[in-house]
Amino acid sequence: MAAIPNNDIKLQLKLNDDGSITANWIILPGMVKQKVYVSRVKSGYGVEWNYDWLDNSYTTQAGLSANNQYDFRVEQIGEHVSIGGDVKRILIPSDFYDNKPIDVPQNIKITPQPTQISVSFDAVPRAVSYDILFDNKACGLRTLSKVFTGLKPKTSHTVAVRANGSKQSSPYSVTQTVQTLPTTPGTPLQVKRTATETTATISWTEVNGAVGYDILFDGQLYSTDTISKVFTGLEPGRSYPFQIRARNEDLAGSYTGQLSVATPPYPPASVSAVSTENSVTISWNKVTGASGYLVRCNSDETNTYSGTTSVKYDGLKPKTTYTYQVACRSSDGIGSYSAIQTIETLPKLPSIPSGISGETTESSVTIKWKPANDATGYDVLFDGSTYSTTVPSRTFTGLVDNTEYSYKVRSKKRTVSASMV
Image (cartoon, rainbow, N blue to C red; front, side, top):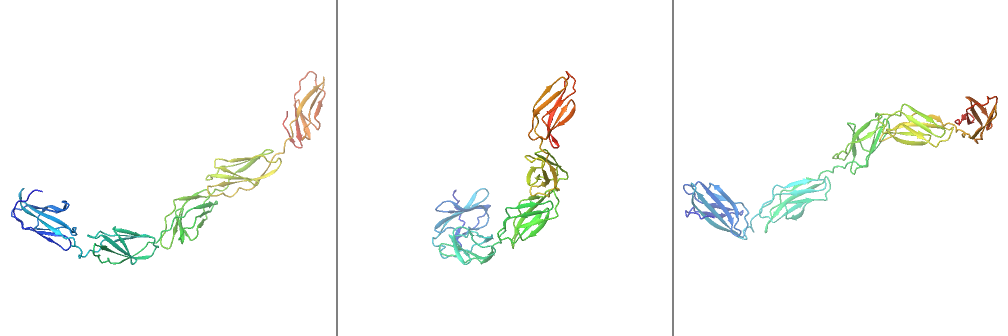
């Protein structure tokens, strides 16, 4: 640092009770500005400085460290030239603060939560630790904040704070009373829904501490004190949005994400069936809003997807009556079944004749075949006309010699006939 011209400004230093240093001096003629620089001798680092000071006194910050010497330098500047100044040194004794009072912490902030309270405050000069008097129990700390946990919701607690110096403590701050916040209920979980064509039932697991629940259903708010709600008068084949939240005596919790429940449509208007001797195929018209269908044939039920409009049941008994119905499904329920209808499987056809052969003379043809065990008779289609017989042969006479005749034979059982061969 440059030397100061030897023009005495009568610099005097005073150590104040709060640990600050006040300097006074005279101002020389021609002074334009002044440089004030305060440094700690041990470290050589500046503590405070101001290079545009105009007054004839200067007071440092309070609470300067004890057991240290400080250099206080003032230099007066004229028109671009130093015109005078001085440097003085002062000691703050090691026991300077032993009998000095320490300030009460300020800006105390208390933040309650349902089960904890946070306390914070500003630092106090010369404080080496702090005490928080929480519910009349002192808690010592060296930081500027503390969180008190394990508290119960909606309970009152008292808080006061003091600072501790090396030898003395400040008084406690004014005692403040704060109440922990009420607990916000949790969000309902395991939401289930079922639906019929005109109703929807929504249920969920109980939320701890809840005294009731709100359901925002299709834009309208409903309340209940149970863990389920039934909505009636709904439209078939429609999806309804909803959300649920829990309430306790003080607060309402968060809603669930948006969910939905879908009512199944009415049954198909057109349901029909066709049969063979061992199968029934049931068909119906496609229904808007159906996610699938439930088809019932006697006691056998089959689920199908929305793109399917027919189901075939195989392995049935011949000449047997079966009932059938169709209902529409949604993602959350099954609608009512269509009216019960019946269909009969066809009788079982007799076996097709085998081993067919023909014997001829000049004017007759005898056709023979192996007997069919399940046949009660036979039809012979000969030269365009059908002839019946109960035995496995048939002779045709009065024919024209050297003429070709076509024929087929089929077995029959009562009113059912097999295919011609």
